[in-house]
Length: 433
Ligand SMILES: *[C@@H]1O[C@H](CO)[C@@H](O)[C@H](O)[C@H]1NC(C)=O
Ligand SMILES: *[C@@H]1O[C@H](CO)[C@@H](O)[C@H](O)[C@H]1NC(C)=O
Ligand SMILES: *[C@@H]1O[C@H](CO)[C@@H](O)[C@H](O)[C@H]1NC(C)=O
Ligand SMILES: *[C@@H]1O[C@H](CO)[C@@H](O)[C@H](O)[C@H]1NC(C)=O
Ligand SMILES: [Zn+2]
Image 1 (cartoon, helix red, strand yellow):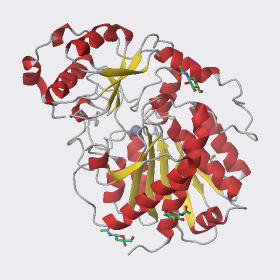
Image 2 (spheres, protein in one colour):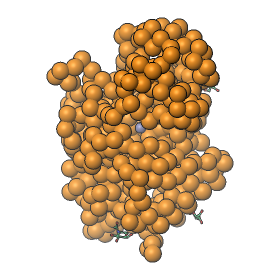
Image 3 (spheres, helix red, strand yellow):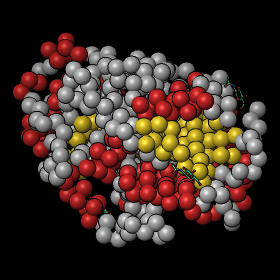
Image 4 (cartoon, protein in one colour):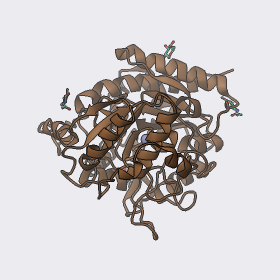
């Protein structure tokens, strides 16, 4: 990562070195009492420098954007501040005349608020599955096995490989076996562990497909003319870890030989401008690109599958959170893709369809100019490998709950996102140009 680095820090009038990072960096179960999530929006270059330097030094957990590197004038910046750190950081910001707002005042309470409503979750009943709660990895895998057995006409479950910790990487192939060759759509959720609404959406999509196939002509058409490869949890190890140890874990769980830090950003590890702008070489950073491209077994397995089926797969859809955006290539550079108008039209229609449900607005555009520049992303890789429609969704919300999106909001979020996915799919079945 190219950071403005050292010299800037020396120019700061404030005592940057007085800021103390709270150790250990990552809290464990029940360890978020008093942690806050604050929002700052730097108003000028000086504030930008101060924030970048402070966040680099403190190694705080950035919720958006995903690295201090991305903070520029006007960037809405949400950051999780551990209790010990907030005692020095908040006065420091005040001294520097940087306004901040508190999004979440006690993270532990916010987490407990979310788990409290979970008494009705009917863990075990697969016949009356509850799609309006978040599910653990084990629950999701049981559910997949169940569908594979009970819906064998439309569902086929298989594994594309094994994770770093040895878990199978399951994918559901959904669609009517109506003809020998059909185009396909790939969907993955949960590349980043803490973005729990992603896996919830993948499950919702499968539910809708199976429940409305008989009655909804659009769904029937989709499942007759296409296959859907749905991978509900891409980063299985990280997702599991986010349930058992650290709710805000983002990366994979691979071990590094030279550092204590675990994990690689599975959305910076793809072989497309690997570890260039917007990715970090440092194993302790949340945007660490890994020791080499496809170093992560999860990335390697999916890349292998997509490469093998690149002729068949016409759309790649990846589900993240949070920001409320629909993004398409390029991520790694400011440039428009050759088929820009077709892809842009698909995105424009999709966000309108999404908005028609509850009025929620999504921004859309090339990832580089709409979100930020990042290299080594799965979406760019899919596009570069011949999949013409490559999209990344950043689902709800825009920071009020952030990664702790309440379960109450699973249904509206998934309902509106379904409309967007259906719209993109129909676009695919029509000729563009
Ligand atoms: C608790 O959760 C409910 C919805 O589940 C939400 O409306 C409320 O704002 C939450 N409170 C806190 C403190 O997060
Ligand atoms: C899904 O079911 C089929 C048989 O219907 C079986 O061959 C296959 O192994 C099952 N998949 C998994 C991952 O268990
Ligand atoms: C543009 O899209 C069409 C079909 O939608 C496809 O055949 C063509 O290869 C694409 N061209 C590029 C440069 O991606
Ligand atoms: C897709 O979006 C376009 C434009 O908003 C709309 O005309 C069309 O009906 C939508 N299709 C579906 C299936 O939602
Ligand atoms: Zn993400």
